[in-house]
Image 1 (cartoon, rainbow, N blue to C red):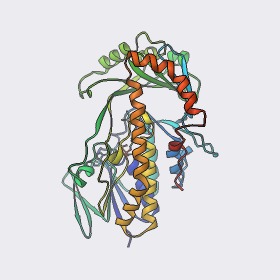
Image 2 (cartoon, rainbow, N blue to C red; image 1 turned 180 degrees about the horizontal axis):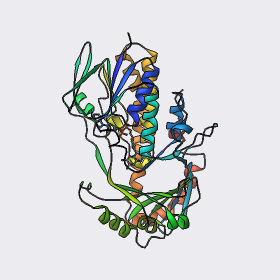
Image 3 (tube, helix red, strand yellow; image 1 turned 180 degrees about the vertical axis):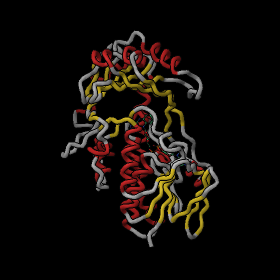
Image 4 (cartoon, rainbow, N blue to C red; image 1 turned 135 degrees about the vertical axis):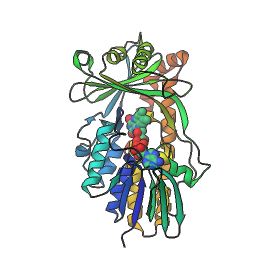
Length: 393
Ligand SMILES: Cc1cc2nc3c(=O)[nH]c(=O)nc-3n(C[C@H](O)[C@H](O)[C@H](O)COP(=O)(O)OP(=O)(O)OC[C@H]3O[C@@H](n4cnc5c(N)ncnc54)[C@H](O)[C@@H]3O)c2cc1C
């Protein structure tokens, strides 16, 4: 008999996991908390080549899934005076041309959900998981609207604030704030035309008071993000769109990178979001339930690896469930394959984020030492290759 799976969360991990489970012979149903369209907001993310390569193993062509995105295989790091400190690869492209790609979150969700729908996988919106009950026969999930769903397996892909995580282990750690806010925007028109950088390079700058990144999209608009450091998380209603724009303009005033001009001319500014990661989550599973993606191991956005880890998780889970019929054994195999790698990436992400929050004295040292440190680090090849050259065998 076909085994059934409840997938909680229709984000990156949940959608790809449903596709991987379907490939492995399961009948998955995705249950997404938001209503259709409601969660397809936000700015953009850069998905690294290791995540894209993992998609290919499911028969998904990254060039099609990421058709609305653009290649950003390289990053240029600058100081607040605009001087380039280092130029670094964001993972070597694969021989078939698959390379680190930047895409709007909304476009990525749409493409992945479209793939799931094409394969006949149901996706139900407005289903917020609130609790789970386990029995020898399976797992039953309760939703906020009072309905329930059952299956042989529950995949908790419900993101950073996962309810599945606390249902599995009430003592599970909560997300920890990383001391950085995140904002993004899109600038078109004459300002973008005058300031757009060369294609294919994600520009990043340590401003004096905040970190800034920007890149040129295929339609010649400039996509940008900003990371102001801040001791406490922002409250939901702390800024209006106008006061947030003013705050960002003040943070970048006087820096010799085009942050202020791009922000001032931006058609749309999104955020602020607080940035978080998760300390080690000790319980990822029981016999019928598994956490994947941010629910299990949220990684700092500064790593550029959250989406790729979610995709790698999902693909690996499908592999494990295909390889053996007992679900509990497959989930144990999954954890053995994933835990070490994702915990190292979480630690790496935390270190990357902390370089963005240096004070004025730290910034002097950082700007002076970065070129030398990068030359030393990269003299034997890309030190991040253990992350980006990883391929699911
Ligand atoms: C500002 C920002 C910038 C980022 N930039 C990058 C980047 O450049 N590169 C990168 O790789 N990563 C980036 N990330 C991280 C990346 O977005 C995440 O790691 C990735 O989305 C994780 O996928 P996921 O499916 O686990 O979680 P999500 O994509 O968050 O999906 C979780 C889904 O579960 C749903 N959900 C939540 N609770 C419930 C519930 N109780 N029941 C049912 N459904 C539920 C949510 O609505 C959501 O659709 C960034 C994150 C942020 C916040």
